[in-house]
Image 1 (cartoon, rainbow over the protein chains, first blue to last red):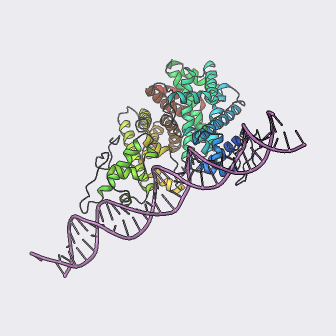
Image 2: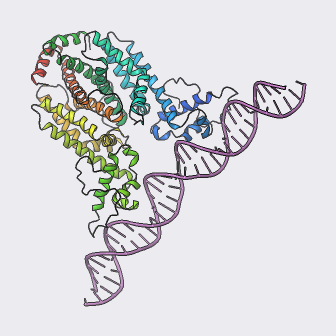
Image 3: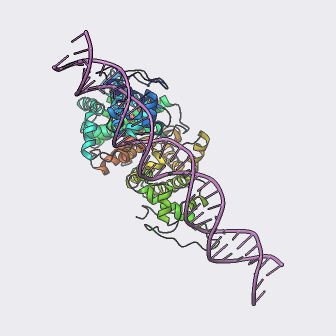
Length: 239
Length: 239
DNA sequence: TGTACATCAGTGAACGCGCGTTCACTGATGTAC
DNA sequence: TGTACATCAGTGAACGCGCGTTCACTGATGTAC
């Protein structure tokens, strides 16, 4: 019933309330309640279809046009949801990285946290990562850069480059790692009925595979002779 | 206007035909035309929204209820489309593998063909791989196994295991490689506006990363001392 | 050879539904005079 | 201290739209007698 992770927006949302009108000057409260209700509805199975403005209004205990007091249209509400989800994803990854013993392990823990987030919040992951957005190139670039999650991830990759684990441009390397993590995450979200093996190990293996492969491949392109040394280093990092 | 790859279903489809009624006993022709029109509509941008039964009927030059003569409902038509797409994907991967110099390279070429298919047919890829399907576990397992694509891919992984490149269960290893390829494929489909680097290299790199990483990781879990030898072997395979 | 009939391929019109959005309105509350 | 008024939070009813699906029907064509 409640949102799967703490929302920055306030207020619990019950099933079918008749809401008390906000006191004067507190009209903005409704914005938070609408956003929270949208998040909750989207978290349910088939959330994307379930989140109509009518459903949101009913959850909050308010009439449908009231939503337009705080969101220009449905898309604006969805945009707000995306921001919320990106922030939560970023927080989960940052928290995971905090427990790392070295920069390479930190990257691995972030990757695992990424997939675990998708596993725990499949419908939210679907909205931000699997939906087609009607953005122009500029709008989209803005949105990606505005969300800290990808930037923080690139920073971690840069740390690894500085430590000599990878060779190359951090943002380019990050894309490749992101692809691997997103691949597993989206498969789990979209194909829940696939006969998956035990997920904890699959996730760890896939993330490790990407990290090791990138280390090996980015080195291969530079100096193919140095590989044994590279592998020895990876081994020392206690992957 | 025409479908992006040869359909097993016959018949060209023009914009707004008035179709001539099929001669007696040839009623089945319409099925192929409906399927082809659905494929064509789904290939367009926003294809998933654009493919309504009304739009399909108009493309074929037939009334809407006629579709029900050959498909039980809209879902049945979508199922038929999925079969068609899976078959085309399988064919593309098989063709790519035919040009390989060794089993490991064959896997790499299949991975590249997989991503290229998604890149060339983004809306078709979206339908089969990014949509949520309302299947039960059994229905879905049947569907996956019925489509040859995944089976053929597992076979190629098995060849690599036999050749000593990977260690482990072929279907388990295949899942990890699939995740990596699907990750990049779906990112390209869903986020066309992302500031991607040159795609040919990104694709090759990502696939190679997965292959090398899996080889290294699957060996790591067995005998951590043997890594230099493994890398030397990968190098010899001219990755 | 002619005709009644079954079959076949397809149609026209309507069904109810839920959707996003808009518009004119209501009624409580604080504030200026 | 009383009252007119502006502001604010929110509402009720309707808009047009496109959708999947159903139902009774049409008209051409082959076949049995």
